[in-house]
Image (cartoon, rainbow, N blue to C red; front, side, top):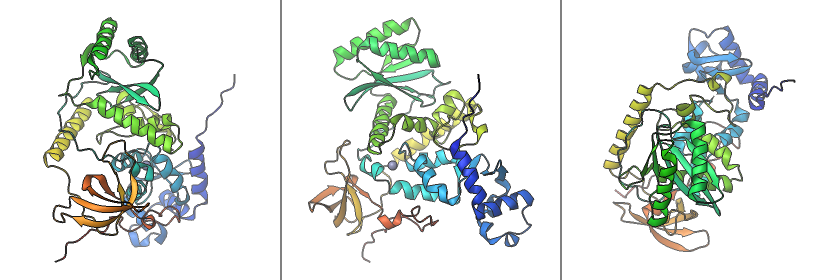
Length: 415
Ligand SMILES: [Zn+2]
């Protein structure tokens, strides 16, 4: 039997384009020879790489900054689109980029790109934040997992989350009977092991749910995890994860993308400034639509101390941010382009509008806005988000980089 080599087409394309990109070639030659002693002696085209010179390398026709592939200018739009496959937020997307690709000003470009993404803007959240709950940090992957049900587009899903790695398993359910759920759970136990604790949903209607829990408990007790109902004081992780999955799938649907690709990108994206769910659970990066150097797929363990310290730090930071109250929000200006959530409900789609008047200028609490169909609404600040205008988001179309600051012009009170 012959082995069929599966070449990474994208990595090959990057190598081909790098070979024909004059700037990339000057950079490659300089790396291969040796950098001059002073920045001024450097060819003008690559002086901006000077600060990174000690991290740069050439490997099989590809330029690297550490483990990250340097993407030539004309491929950046394509890579940016892939980077945003799961429509995750700015911080997460920047962290994902750090694990595989690089170009100058990539972080500023990610901010611009996502700020201008209509799919993200239309489904953003305007619900008040829930009080912060400290939760126990698990000792090892798949020790403690949570399950919840998700009903989406007429189909039931079982969403399972590992509290340690935040790895999500998503199973389509033909029925929501205990038997169907238990079969899915057992298949997951066969894959990742039997958790020590299984937190399950205990939401109403109580008789049905508690019967289900009883049955799950009886069945899995043979496999020994301790089944505990979800109680209000818990950190509500499963509930949050269900919302995340729902958003992931809705955005994929709007973008006409395979939701499983979005899930793959979620699993590859670092959580809590640490490592990705896949890295924490399986000690490796998963091959995906993002180009990556091969040695990134070789298992690397995140030390337990590092993981626990990062989680602890994140919990403290989140608590502090919550205690400080809602973050400072930039005031609106009349004429400013915004997104409006008419009802303030989480499932409401955000629509385009323009600010026509400001109320409570000092506290910046509400504004009147006019939608594209001419209707005027006065709404709380929570239901209005800034919308970057088109010319602030066109950087990739003309391949001109970097752009100036994308910040929405601040409204100043008259002196
Ligand atoms: Zn998006």
